[in-house]
Image 1 (tube, rainbow, N blue to C red):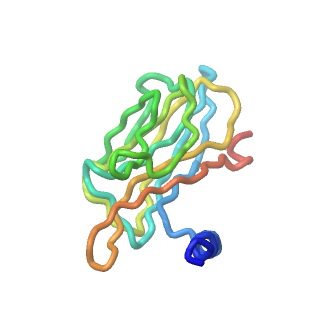
Image 2 (cartoon, one colour; image 1 turned 60 degrees about the vertical axis):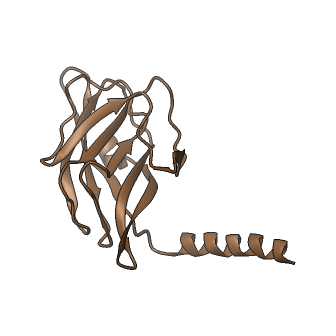
Length: 170
């Protein structure tokens, strides 16, 4: 009897998560500049949920499969560090991935790491990167944030989808 309770519980939990509001960090494309040299510069914002914060050196945001990053083109707002690796920095729990983004080998991943405390409920702009890739696509991002749970800080892994609004991709 106990075995039949777990699938029901997991299904109910999954439905509750799907039905609830999206209370988590978001990454959005706000602008795409088509440059004279044939590259395109993407402008991103990061929006934090009021219940979460970003801890310096520990919390981060990774955009996967950016593709053909123009060397030296990435910019960060004050209080953020930048890195780009073939395999993106992904939130882990006890050494194992906490989320499973699609990470295509050979494509750049963009990671911005908080270097100062970032409060919840804020919108941070100033994240940019240029690519030689023509056209746009939907992508994924992950983030690791700190959420206050019962008065104690707790790490939270986030995975989300980035879409470029069609009017920006023209």
